[in-house]
Length: 207
Image (cartoon, rainbow, N blue to C red; front, top):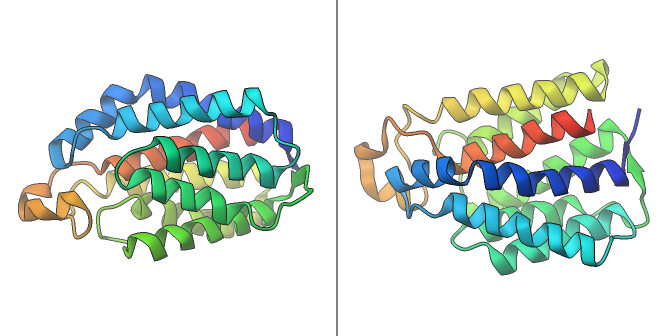
């Protein structure tokens, strides 16, 4: 079983609806420990992605991911635009001319994207950032590679959800939330939450 370009386009379009639906929730999480605009930013960003894809349909997977990257960097405020933009730009690297990808290629793309987030954000697991969802998801993908795309993507989404929830008792060590010190404890990280929503949607559409 392969992940095709039309499936990926459907996933990216779906994210517009997901982040619009979850806009208030994400912004509430962010208002507890940040600027309070994460939901608004993600909804605006993926609405712009939807418009960009519909106005100029990408010819291959590389073009699709690069469109997402450039659009998010231009339209999403704060740290999220550059971080998600870097993720999709790095993930696009090996897909010039590609119309489909297998689970190994998908896993490699996510790994490269996550490495971009790590390098740009200079964060690591346990810092109470989106990496607390991304890194367990990547591990789950690798561990479930022999179980097929559907099972592996589901395992990745489940691991991201666990990682997201695990940010609640953590003290933030990166980003604006880190300025709060111990007051950041007891709040779910908004970036980890938006990363989980992205992976949950991938499991639903690509699997």
